[in-house]
Amino acid sequence: MDDPLVARMRGFGTTIFAEMSALATQTGAINLGQGFPDEDGPAAMLDVAVEAIRSGGNQYPPGPGLPALREAVAEQKRDRYGLVYDPATEVYITVGATEGIAASVLAFAGPGDEVIAFEPTYDSYAATVALAGATLVPVLLRPEGGRFTFDPDELRAAVGPSTRMILVNSPHNPAGTVFTRAELEVIADVCREHDLIALTDEVYEYLTFDDAEHVPLATLDGMRERTVTVSSVGKTFSVTGWKTGWVTGPAPFVRAVQTVKQFVTYAVGGPWQQATAYALRNELGWVEELRKSLQGKRDRLITGLEAAGFTTFRPQGTYFVQADIRPLGFADGMELARALPDKAGVVAIPTQVFYQHPQAGAPFVRFAFCKQDHVIDEAVQRLARLS
Image 1 (cartoon, helix red, strand yellow):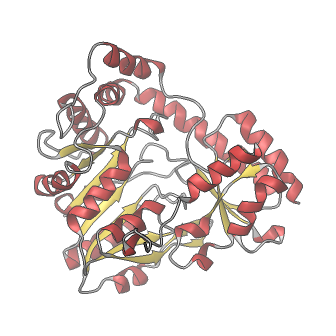
Image 2 (cartoon, one colour; image 1 turned 90 degrees about the vertical axis):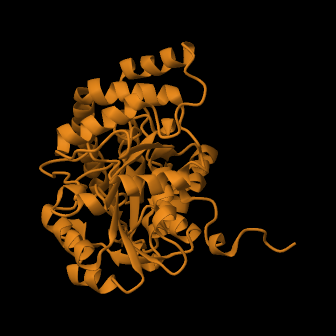
Image 3 (spheres, one colour; image 1 turned 90 degrees about the horizontal axis):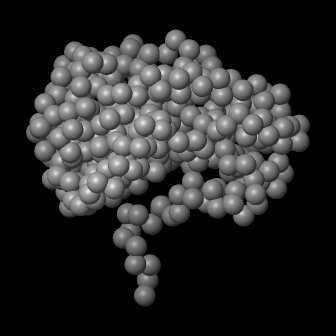
């Protein structure tokens, strides 16, 4: 039998995260590749999940999500951003942000449609657009002034008669950029002018550093009615394995997402939903301490990487630092990432896997800093061998 995999997915094999994490396990290397913390979230939140399991919350919850969580999400949007959503019709719970993004793309884009996204793109975007039978049109983020940003003219030029939506990730993984209000206004202008849907991935909304402000695209004039926003508990509260996310937007858009999602995973684990509702209402102080801690870890890792000879880009948000490998005499991030476990006992992610044209990202590798300080210190000591 020929390859049974449907043709549009043949370009997508095992994710780079699985490959590099397996390499870390095989070699005993420190894993600064995959972005998961090595410490859990607030203890009281974990206790709520345990109690929910022990008290019988283990059967199917309502498909759209537990009312308590939908209400907590609506409160968070109102209190933090001034965005008002009806928890009954404009908030929908998903199996993590990845499913929320996938269900949204599948709901809004199909064969013949084009979806614009800023490149490098988180790896699930291209696969999901391919699943929908649509075409991903990348707009390149380039280093400029110590951060990655886009050319507004290139964004405008990317729009064509088949463009259906723009997928916006801010704070951006893997570039670490937090789009400024001015950059978001450019995106909003394009959406309004061409009547496009905006799908925003805001999972790192709380994890911004220095003076960077996360501005939801939906808060800009005329954008609430055309924006679907995705976020989740995983990054905010350091429980990435819970896979509990949410979609917010106008009721017709949320209904469209539900139409897709209900036939993929009908419901999301009830105990995680109960604990997430508790955390959104009671543990945001813990999140602020996490944010401060991560900023320190970012600086700790950057200091070590630069001492080892890398050029770094100081991220404004997320878990990740982009490092330019060329000062060390390397040119291909994939080649270096596969060699790093043996060369230095550390695993990183080659940034080129996030590009349609890998050469654009070849000089960079991505390191995660959501780790304990002693892990970061040991990793940078090992990386010093490269120089």
